[in-house]
Image (cartoon, rainbow, N blue to C red; front, side):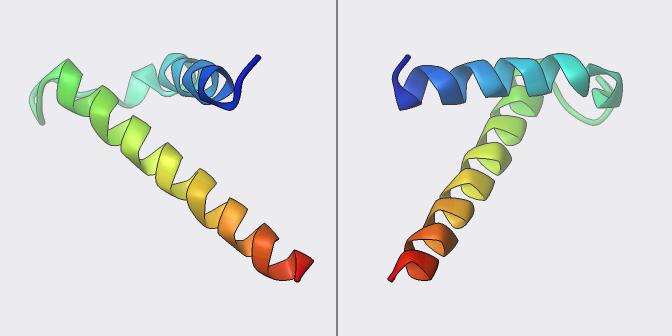
Length: 56
């Protein structure tokens, strides 16, 4: 499995686990998924950056 596939799978699982937090009165479903995906990828990027600095 590639990194992109792993990240996509992680996002799907996170969407499934946090679906109860979706509120259609606050926005549409597509925006909710996009926000969740963006936040998850930013978190992964920060973690990878910290790991790279720690390895130096």
